[in-house]
Image (cartoon, rainbow, N blue to C red):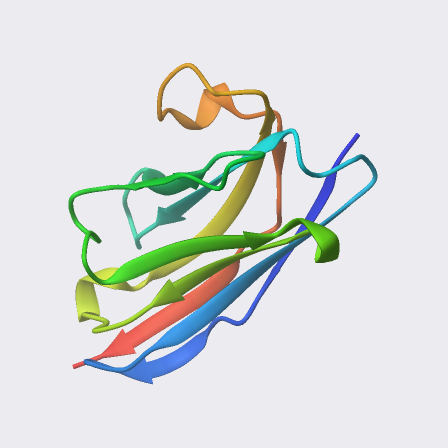
Amino acid sequence: QVQLVESGGGLVQAGGSLRLSCAASGRTFSPYFIGWFRRPPGKEREFVGIISGRDGSTRNADSVKGRFTISRDNAKNTVYLQMNSLKPEDTATYYCAAKYGRPDGDRPANYDYWGQGTQVTVSA
């Protein structure tokens, strides 16, 4: 069992930055791939990015490429989502999710554990 807790959300003006954290507990953290997802108001949950377990390689959705960066600190059991140049359309509840080993695709159903989410609101 892995427990995930997101933090760092808030209200920010367009063009601003936020850093979200995803703190994990319960199991050895390094083998887990961690994905970030978001649910905009009235929409489905969508993939934001992923970071691999051991080598730290990342991949982001096209909508956030060049603006969002994912990193991890396995010693702290924490993954970060640095969000720069935020836009109003980035407004959403952001979730981190964990999968032991590489997920087979970007769908939420491919992940085993989820945090409770943190709200990010970007004002125009």
